[in-house]
Image (spheres, rainbow, N blue to C red):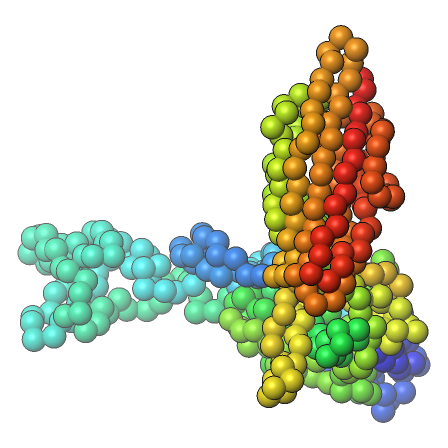
Length: 518
């Protein structure tokens, strides 16, 4: 993956990080940063959802009064517009902004005269003019209802719901008019005050000089997030894979961003539970507005304790959309390793933590043997790059027709370089596990429990396979293996792995006796 970052863009970021615009002395008049400083436009920095959970959810939106699909994550939107200001007080309004703004995070400044232009008041107007909100404002006011092939009804609106209107006509009679397909239109006069057709930011600004100003705003919006989507195509011998990666951006923020400079932040940014500007969002707002004019794809760099991806061109992100952009060039022939794991107790509800005297607990287990794929994120394996959280789909080509077929998929968390990616592919069809309790004894006065288990793994393949057998010592924290048929590796205080080889069309049997004391 390219990590190229232009010197001009880096200088611009440094300048803005200390709270100012890009001074002329710090940027060449022809540099991308200097050009962007004098231009209108929008820039969006999108933050990944915590833990990489980027799947949309359905929640009730009280502002819209309906269930809507939301996207985990959030974004910081920076926009520059030119507008004429008179000297003294001005009413400034920006529409076409996100409906999901956190109003406490809004920033406004004049880049033309930052010292002489101050904000006296600011607000976010989101009382949108839908039909019911307009009717609500016309309670006790006259309206006219025009119906198909029927006489019009005029009068004072007394009440309404989704099914009917209640009017008092000029004679004083009360009429109930059904809101059905016979209504052609309802005439209410002017748009009531306080209603807007689009979410709007409003400021009361005091300008020190008259003329055209380049205005910059920034705000945080929810319902916008991103995650990575990976596709790995494994080779015929299942020992290597070709890996490609795409960024999936979900925008449910209530606004479209046309021709936007795009940045993505990968990492788990902590956010305070109460509304307010968090550290990660503040840093993003103070970052450079322009993207470098270099590469067309993403450039990546470390940013605070996260990783920042900057798209080398502008792009449009429509509202209520899913958009994909290639994250990095495909990487060929990455070594992979297929691992079989038999965890007989994987479906067993976990014991609560105290001494477990229940003989039947864990007496049998699942017959399923899990299949995992391991990828070493190392430079000498062709990777060695930060991998943002997302889903990784694994495919293998069918030699009969050459088409790739899905063999499994799993979610990965943010993975630094030199760490392993472990993917659960599914369960092996031709491997069967069997777990049985062979003996159990407890002596309460002597404070011990002793039990013996037998684990069988049967292989119906034409070749031998290696299997990791995972066993949990779940009855108590103090335990010793008194007898064992195979060597084991202690993974933590209660988990051991027995690595075994199972012959082709054969079976391997593990037995062990564990003693718990307290």
